[in-house]
Amino acid sequence: MALPKSFTPFQIKDKLAETGLRGKNFEFLTDYTRQQLQSLFEAGEMLEPYWRSKLNLMEGKVLATLFFQPSTRTRFSTEVAMLRLGGSVLSESNPTTSSSTAKGESLSDYLRTVSVYADIIALRHPNDAEVFPALSGARVPVISGGWGNVTHPTQGLLDVYTIYRALGRFEGVKVMIASSDLSRARSGHSFALGLATMGAELVYVGTSVNPIPQVIMDKIKATGAKVTVHNDLSNEEYMECMADVDACYLPGCSVPKDDPAARAAFLDTIKPFYITLDGLRKIKEKTGKVVGIMHSLPRNDVEFDYAIDDSEFQLYFRQMAFSVPIRMALIAGMVGVD
Image 1: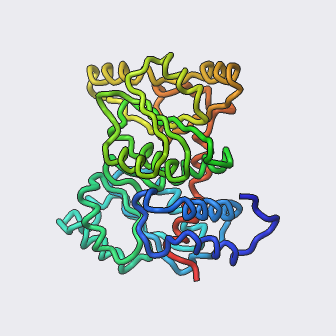
Image 2: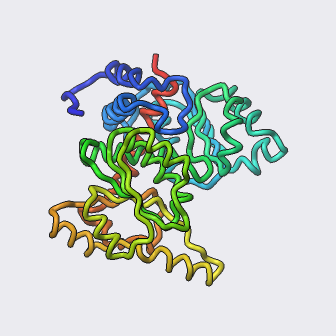
Image 3: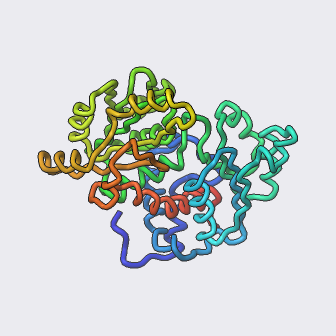
């Protein structure tokens, strides 16, 4: 989007209204049309000048963050987004021990209770099968901060927004999503759903042992997007495949710590997926292409060369910077601005 030299809060409000998000939950990126997401990205870009300052679009409104799993970036960026919009935050970072759920309250009743005090809820939970039926208890819009292993739509949203801001387009863009365990790569799958909706081409690189969940593949195919899957590649084949894409996304991994045998087995599995700065430079020399490296973070040094941090190939720290304005747009769009 080519922004005018100046724009008013009223224009931001109009752009937020175009998203059609008001009063709705945010569960899957494929729940929205390409035009709705485009309007959301344009609203995010309009809000970028305010993510280090303040704009009172949500004055008097309250966000409740309920995180049943650990989080740094998702929780902080969501809370900061509400604060930058002029709203307030109620934060519960360990509901299993410090809320009424510790006394056996159902998730549905918990959401209904919190709805009394908040205008919007951000929820992270390890069990998506428990979350979906419980959403009926909420009386305000609910943002998924990651449910189960399948979906993490706000992470996917900011990742797609990063492509929008870094490349300026989706048509003709090809993105790789690579992991030794695609069965649990919820941030990568949400990214894929958003890219598919916006018309980008997808390349999955994984292993035959831990494939993509069928529900995700079905949703991607329903968009009509082109998707290719490669399994069990060598590192050389992996880098050859990377030379054909515009960006490579790593959804993160958990390295076993307490079991030496499990750690050794994991390191052997992930070794073919390692990315070096030298390998990226060779791709550029051969094709002229700067392949952006993206990551949901936190990272491990077994995934890629940290020398990429200070190179032109690094996009993962830019993703963090983009997370606040796009979450500002999401919150304001869901609550609505009068």
